Image (cartoon, rainbow, N blue to C red):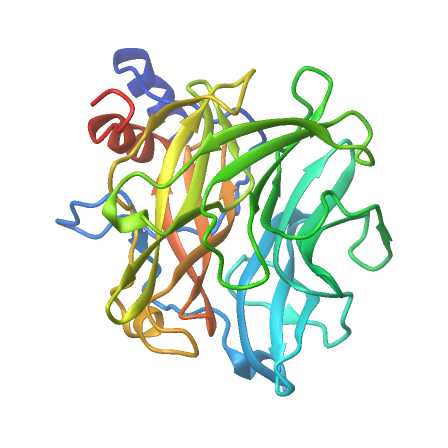
Length: 331
């Protein structure tokens, strides 16, 4: 019924469309009555806390993809020694998760995407010379093949596109330094084989006050008929430290280093206790998004206060309309 109603509505109205697979069991809650913003939180947040694993100090900034008849994920677990580790987990509904206690890689802030029959993981890999972007793939989330790192130190926020564009893999990165970085721009690099990377392109830099310190790519970009929908994080430095919020932009489908539209304000910022209070206060950090091509629904997984995993919802129509109504590019 939802599909038929949406198709009929699209015939009358100019609505955005997700290009991809259907996810009939996508986690979902309807928009609260009277809610005026394009993104709304799951009422039972947080969905994952440190109590999900006995050795965890915190579990946050994690990645999720459809898998089988449910979902699989790679989760950032900072241990009680404060080591940065990644573990896998599985869920039937995308909300209630069983996490494994076996560490698959050292590092943090994973992203996942499925392409060419494999599930590709990118993450912030830890080396003696600084952070780089690790790349690995799996078919079953049990056995992993690690490839060459995708760039030299130092970089973070490595995010693969879910398919080749013009015959090449595309990876968003944020070059940085070994500290908490004076560099705040998103770049794109390209590869024909996931081994040799080049053809670097500038994508975007901080523009408005809410993101003025730095920006970094978030979940795997979502392909739409408008272009690539990119959720990203932006960071404000105030007299009380950093504040992380979520923004959104639309990138060109064939040349994704070109930003077609970009909201001038955040779509989700720290507001609830689990976003305001934690190991790192005032953090909303998106790392994964499920997008259902049938209904246009989008479920965003994000880290709250560097301590927990939370869930928020939107639709492709609401987000695209919001970006265009607050367009930094067309202003």
